[in-house]
Image (cartoon, rainbow, N blue to C red; front, side):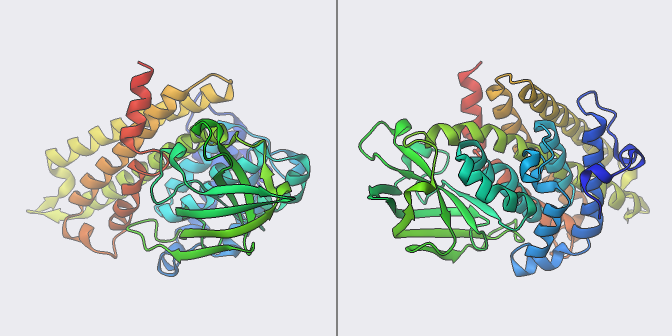
Length: 396
């Protein structure tokens, strides 16, 4: 396998969207990710669904190909690309039809390691970023708790200063990469009695830190190839130098990165929806009922046509939102729109595509059955649809 920079223009041309938003470099990336998906994920990931995680050698291969450093500086082994490149990566991973594999990689690249990169000291970044980019170290972000999801201010995990250490106590829930991750970016309250928006601080916690345990691996409805954990901190002592940024600035860091996280999830959802329509078209053109292929039924053709139109509309809004971000324009409203729209749309698409597969769509052996399970969380994780619509409403 070649790194991103080694892909030829011919490779890129085969996957080009002919979109005004993307450069030749973006299309080179698209071609490389698509090639990896087709050769390294689709033929093998069914086994990963059974074992409950993506093998580390696969993640290291992705790192070696440059996929984990798309947005990071060259000094760490990155490619120094932009938000549009992230969208390309997420969309193509979504097309793999294995949501668990996609989210394993995307949490590492765009939801967890970004906290270290954005708020970390030069010493912290020099220590960790090269290994993060190479895939040697896999990251997780631990914000969500049993009683606090999108309501970040409601977290109860606390961190108190004790000499040259911080001591963490609390629990985290639904943490992607939480079972097999190496490095955790953890949110905790350093001033429980202070204003909620100024009481949260982010910390780096390494696997094996005293007092830090993975309570249990969680058994999920979908994303079965993604390891997800409940974490427990009991008198967990970490060096004070593991604090990310200033005390009390964690809430703002989390809110800032939510914009990137939600853009990534929307792009991933568009990839999933596109793949579902493609495989359903193949099925209905060959599956016969009442003496003719299902494609001959007007109701099926028109529903698929309308779904395709909705997905294309969502795709273009995702691209435009990412383009705004590359220009430093505040796109909070647009990001909230695409997270809500794409999270609901991918579930609409999966519902109809499974329906058109008939009884086979209900069987665990069918791709669409797995995709329908994986898609359900897209309207929940990273900001539930209802939360996103409230963000949009505030800005109308």
